[in-house]
Image 1: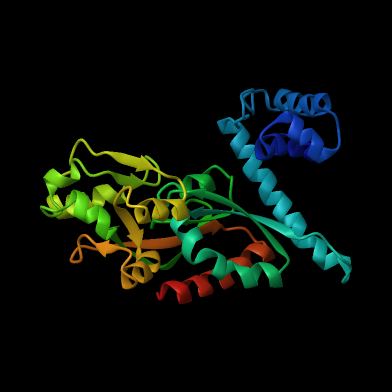
Image 2 (image 1 turned 180 degrees about the vertical axis):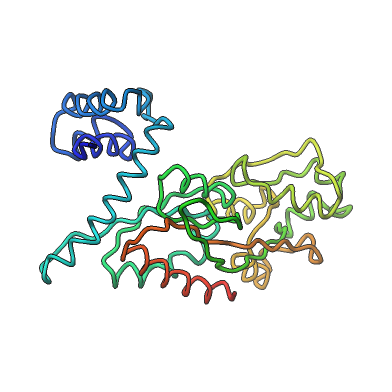
Length: 296
């Protein structure tokens, strides 16, 4: 049998980023948290969390955490049913979201849902090709992803399509692309990526030039808002979704470097296939709203 008091301590060490922070959350001493984690590790017969800064769950630890979060969600579903109208704590949903969605349409899609159903969202941000790993690891109960294949134990729904293009400011174009936007110029002109897993630039280069130019001077800015700001400050050129680029092009702040070349990225929502009222309500309403905003 799993002792959920011990499992809660393990989960908080990971979620809060340390034993001391977990102790503060549980209103117990740090040594008590360490003892609880040690006890569940002894019960499991293996290390469940690394003693690093911050602590990281091992593969076995991730499996236990996924189980704990599912059980916790089912328990939170039960509270309103037995509370008979009395006040109850909101339910927390951990959702994996790509940065572009967070910067454009995601908050509009979830604002009404969260308010009406007393939900707290714990948003984990990563590249749209990487968010599925958060779901596989049990760190989130749902995620926005570009992967079209259904994960075991999960359901999948298509949300819509996001169009991307290559943009820069007129000033940047005058400085770097006087001879045109070609292989020679982009080997010198700085570009920008969200992180090293962001492959949209590569997709554009392969479509335009059938190759990936090297060297490629690159800014790495893991924030969609600051990502666009870097481009607007004429520091670099980069890939921007249409929802952000269109008003900036209309106002003359940006120009389209490759008007005939656009990349359409299909987005999907993956979530646990769990018989949870909260997940069912959130998923149904979120998918409907997302499809409206993405014009599926």
